[in-house]
Image: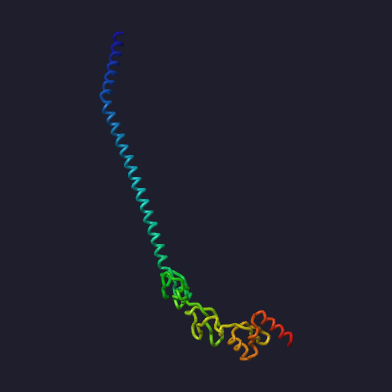
Length: 211
């Protein structure tokens, strides 16, 4: 019985000592956990700061990128204009300065731009008619495209006026010079009294029926 009581007493003493050790170490443990929590908060704040810094850097990059794009667009607009004899082999064409490598470039102007007097600012791009004095054809053209033996004239000139031309069993609505060439200088082929193409066609039918 005595031995049993001694064992119980020893167990109680051990438990008491264990509790005393826990009480002594508890303040240090609390300090450790508080310090860890504080450090964790610092780490979280650091992560937030790093994330915020990264987002700011990304935002600044996007702003810079779109600013550069906008500058490029403005630059392209500022170098857009009329190119006389551009690389696409058109005589007068709206294009960028970079595409006008072999022609004369006029920035910020259309090819058909006119001054206050109604004159073309870019003379080479003026629109009239090119009259071939040899063949007799008269076609709408820009000045730069009207090459010799063509003559650059107003389309309202008499040389460009079309009329009825009857050559044997054929009808042509063309210029007087072209009619002379087709009719081998037969003066009766040219019909100045006929004013419309339809009348010319009826005249041809009547001539065929009467023959």
